[in-house]
Length: 365
Ligand SMILES: Nc1ncnc2c1ncn2[C@@H]1O[C@H](COP(=O)(O)OP(=O)(O)OP(=O)(O)O)[C@@H](O)[C@H]1O
Ligand code: SF4
Ligand SMILES: [Mg+2]
Image (cartoon, rainbow, N blue to C red; front, side, top):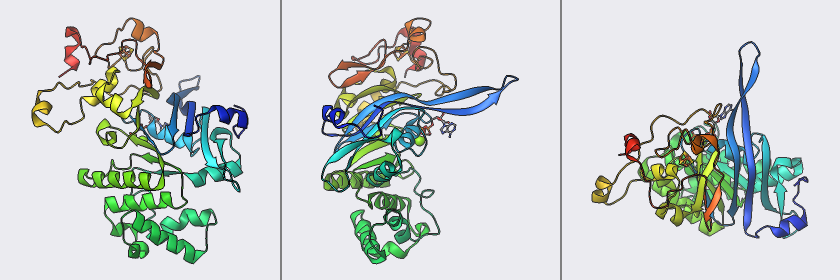
């Protein structure tokens, strides 16, 4: 795709329901120059990520800290420039009732303006993302003013409507962020994201900074807003427990790559990749007897550096069943469709549960 706008013949080949298509996205950061040669060193934060998100659905991107989730989100909205790849986003075409794809990675200023109106992001830290010196009204009406929507009193009315939509009182408009709890601040962040009637919201760990009881309330709010407003979500989280009830589809990321992707129930009922098995074993089970009896897969060591990722399979240095030396250290496993809609990148898929050999038991239990 070379033009900024997907051509109509290309668009017609794409599933009508797709709102966001990410194709082979990469992002490398130049981090430092070392030694006499001062050779450039790159950290590959995102290493060829592809997925679609359909209208009204939620794709959850899950993985440990540092695996590239936020970098993927920032590249999608071009808050940072991707190194390569394409991001297609379907937005209403101004002045018509049609919808067209914008290739965000090549979009001009006018197209980016349209993208910024219809795609929003909510960040993890509700304290850092709200300016403490601005009133709630000023914070929520900021995107309206930036896009020239309404006059001051119309924007004020929209702010009050949005506050009520996210479960806060309209009278809170003149308060400052410090007068609210963490959960209420996140609601303000969500209200700001909704101000311009977006179709897509990227939620980058929206509940990770909140207490567990408040997490559930905010997740319920996000679910209600999705059904009420027909929103499409890209939901980012570092553990599977959080996304269990909010996802339509789940993509598991490891060191810059998606290693497993499936519909929510398929992934939770039949995980296949050893890394997903490990993440799954950390998800609490409500029944205390089952919880006590089950085996946990403890992954040794931290996620390796993305400056020098392991050869072959990037997970091999922590995988309890790696053949290394062997195919796991020599050949990078491709993301392949194991069964309809269930994608795996592993030379030894484990659909029956993780079969850990005796010599590798140190990593289990
Ligand atoms: N501006 C930057 N310059 C250099 N390296 C960066 C930059 N931003 C991110 N990184 C690195 O890219 C990798 C991916 O970071 P990213 O923030 O996307 O991870 P994440 O999955 O969102 O993690 P977390 O769960 O901690 O938020 C990390 O190794 C991080 O240190
Ligand atoms: S390819 Fe090998 S190292 Fe990678 S997850 Fe599969 S078994 Fe483990
Ligand atoms: Mg992050």
